[in-house]
Length: 183
Image (tube, rainbow, N blue to C red; front, side, top):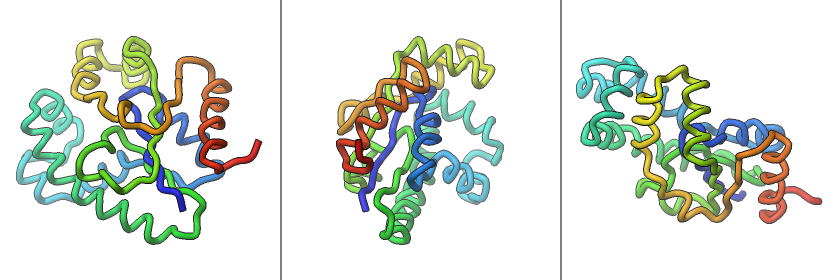
């Protein structure tokens, strides 16, 4: 089994790539797993006095210390989840794990390859405002909270500035290089 991290900054198009991959591969979205952890965490409730994701997000996207505290609670649990996922799916040709911050130290060494979905800042800003109905200020606050380190360490970069057909073609080029599909 090939273990692949699917990375990209907010509004880069990771979800679109996930949809394309799900037709043939197991793909797990760590944002959804994180939400489940958050919804059931006594430790997060104690720290933030709420489990309301919007309230927690407004705090952590404004306060890097609080964001680090939240990551310190969630990331170790995500690491255990990923290791268990890989253990239970040894029979698959590949397992893709999608997340924005898989370059972080808690996840180093878990993956054989990483794919980074890339789009320019202004395009991502437009997508985020439209998709989430954010003000420009709120969208920029969330975008600026993410550090673009994973692109530098990615094995493959998929450009997502065009149509869904172009995105699919770019993805297929990477899958061919990984010997996961045939031409």
